[in-house]
Image (cartoon, rainbow, N blue to C red; front, side, top):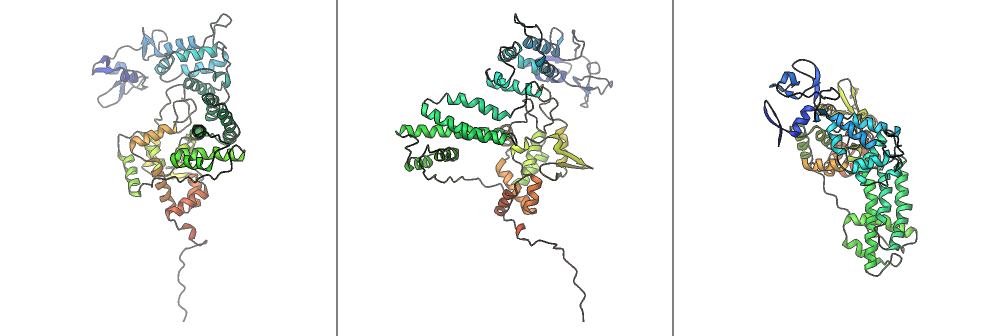
Amino acid sequence: MASKHWPEGAICSGCFVKACETYGVCAGCGVDRMLPGISPTGDRLCTDCAGGLGDYICTRCGQEAWRHYAGICGRCVLTDRLTAALTDNTGTGTGSIRPELQPLFDSIRAMTRPRSGILWLSRPHVPAILQALATGRVPLTHDGLSTLTPWRSVVYIRDLLIACETLPPIDRYLFLFEQWLPRWLDTIDDPEHRKLLHRFATWHLLRNLRTAAQTQPIGHYRNQGARTQLRTAAAFLTDLATRGHTLQHCTQTDLDRWFATTNSTAKLGLRAFLRWAIDHHALPRLALPPVVTGHSPPISNHQRIDLIRRIHTDPTIAPIDRVIGLLILLYAQPLPRIVRLTLADITHHGNQVLIRLGDPPVPVPEPFAGHITTYIASRPNLATATNPDSQLLFPGRRAGQPIHPTSIRLRLHNLGIPNLNARTRAIRELLLQAPAPVVATMLNYTPHGAERIAAQAGSTWKTYAAGDHTRRPTPPHQP
């Protein structure tokens, strides 16, 4: 629906706000200011050079910007609403913003697109969370935040507070699992089942997650994998109970029937619980049926090359999708590793672009190097308070966090790029061109895994004898 009429015609609200949030040097007068106009040649113009676009000077601060209402710009409106949400106006309060929350105030107020902050604060639960922290009703700690709801908004604010250094950093997904676990256990009706699952979660799953978090972030997939194991174990215990059995009295027949009638995800999810139960004498020492997982075959190399060509030539593909697709199709990178890449991993050596996936950095050939350079100049999710100075190559919508792997999977699906199948083909082709140890170190694969994939691909590198295989000239014939 049109919200504004300019000399060119009607303009919708989204395009109007985007035009009013565009700044730079005017192509007409050369002045650095707001550039809502577009010349016939596509250059950006200020309101004076474009003509007829109206007045956008804020009546309060005097800045040229999108005006939210009554001649007041969006930044002033955002400042007012943020001040109201973060000020302690209780009877015992100071009537000002807590010093600990001042960095949060400054970060949100300085966002490039204040309209996004206004829309965020318009949600009724967001000011309520901020007020709970501002008035001290909830301690400004990770545990204090965990008492608030809804949890998604709380997680978002927690990430902002960590980015502002108001709260100490934590492993995000480990903390989410620790907060989810007691709520989930409360949903288990059978007290014996709940007690057993609590032991399994505490002494096996949580211990493994905390150990892993000491060396690197556990990530989304480990968090979800732990939850899947618990849900599968609960389903297995419920299935036994419907047949009048407990885990202590589970028979081989019960176990075989479960593995014969459930899917591969449930089979894999249950094995860790069964092993733990056997080791801790909660389950008789039964034989665990083998789990055969079927992997779909990799795409052909011809399909891979066609996908690379389309990523390079299709103008409708976004820059971020080009780079992610190329990291999979050229360098066989898994999604958890892709999202951890930073700007520091992209380097230049003369005219050559290098990307650090392992050691040493891998050269990026043209024209793909140009796609990476173009993407870096226009990275998304930098216009709000979440990631304005992010060094992540793929910044997400949450402070300090990269784009979620599930979002990447959806992007790849919409582009028709099969993630696992394409990555499998890419690593096989690379291992047919170079020895497995060389490929493993450059692409950050384990040597054992690279050797196994190379054998599956039919590589013959490891059968070569060591030493110099340069052809030597034949000595002259001696009479």
